[in-house]
Length: 237
Ligand code: MN3
Image 1 (cartoon, rainbow, N blue to C red):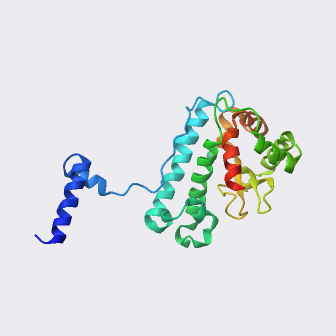
Image 2 (image 1 turned 180 degrees about the vertical axis):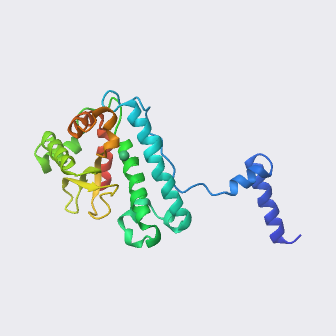
Image 3 (image 1 turned 120 degrees about the horizontal axis):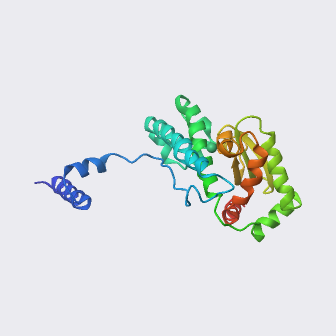
């Protein structure tokens, strides 16, 4: 037995011992895990009632978001190098994504990022008002929290069809309200950093509010996780 064989034998033994048992476990361990996975919400589907209903949260997370994860993983299987960089990096540089998968990466990658961000921005029983740092940034840019909410709502109402609405830190470090079509993220064309975002696709509200996007937005503000917004602001500044 030469040195190389010894090393192989040793490492094989170690893997088998770590995995616990037999060859089937070992074979499974050799299959790489998918690059992206559906993140847990961190709260129950019913936790945001009465503002966001249980059925909407369930379908939205298990079906809509999960579909983006599945499609994104299928693209990464074709071009594994994609997963070697943070998702924000390739979303902000779509021209670097191989043309053969650019459109599904834009849609499914954007969808995965947007929804992951969105879930983290809602919480049951959170603070009803922004933290001091967030409030002072909002006051500086909009005049008041109410005016900021009006601006975000107006941007959302102005988005024809499906898309997202954002509070972002711009290149000038100031806050502004913007919207993006489809599953585009603010990193893509705008190159700005979002600290708050709301899904204004009809699937996000149709079961409870039908066509009334304004009613949904009014409800949605009650779910905002202001601690998370404060964390996002700190990171973006
Ligand atoms: Mn959605």
